[in-house]
Amino acid sequence: MQSARGSIGLVVGLAVLAAAIAYALTVGFGHGTTAGTDGGQNRAVGRNRIVSLAPALTETLFAIGAADQVVGVSDFCRYPPEATKLPRVGSGIAPNYEAITRLAPTLVVNEANEAAKKHELASISTTRLLPWLSLEEVLDSTRELGKIAGRKEAGDALADKIATRLQVPAPLDAPRVLLALQVKPSKLDDVWFVRRNSLHGAVLRASGGKNALQEDVSGVPRMSLERLVEVDPEMIIVLVRDRVPDAEPVLAEWRKLGTLQAVKNDRIGVLDGREVFVNGPRILDLVDRLAVEIRRLRQ
Picture (cartoon, rainbow, N blue to C red):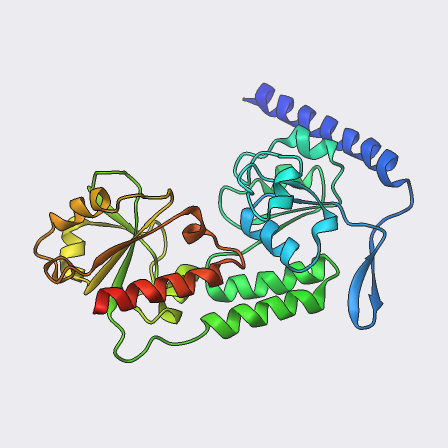
């Protein structure tokens, strides 16, 4: 065990040394990043070198005009298209330390979670872990990204835009909707769902629906089929990551649960595509899609 720890320490230590050399060669000694002002808009003097290990953070940095500061992204960053041209450096859970070191970042940003490699990444560069689960966390972290990137006004404006769209209550006559996540194609052993106290939970409210589970949920958002029968949602909308040319195979498994009022009243639907799972600024587009589906199912 001690030998393994020593090896890890040696690797990280070498990575730090390489990063220092690479940074010196890239931006020159004595040219750190400081904050200045320009017409009320904070800007970075010199150039930040940001590695983003989460798609939502990458999308947000681009949305606030900090694209020129992003030098590396996670393997899962697919938007905007410009981000796909940047070097890939693993993921927030499994970073490629060597690849990150080569980029000589001045800052690494990632979503805050238990699996984030904060201490390992901090050995390479300053690291910020930003909470990104609930709407309130996303708003605060969007503003923080603006400060970090010297784009405070843009960060605040984006947070205000998201808040205006999503910080709204569900209508009094809103149907009780279960937003289910398809995890296992063609098999329904248990149910993964969208929590009320999540960013997607806020999207559901803004779309005119009320979460079928009215209590806040911590931990894994999963329930048994027995619990689902107890909840008995009025409407079920299944979120599917891949495009589904024909929704019937997805819905067939749900239709087997004939005791549910959503099934009895044929109020089950599907929303497909990777964009339904995004948790960056593009999530506002999901509000309209979800609202359309809720209206369709209520007819």
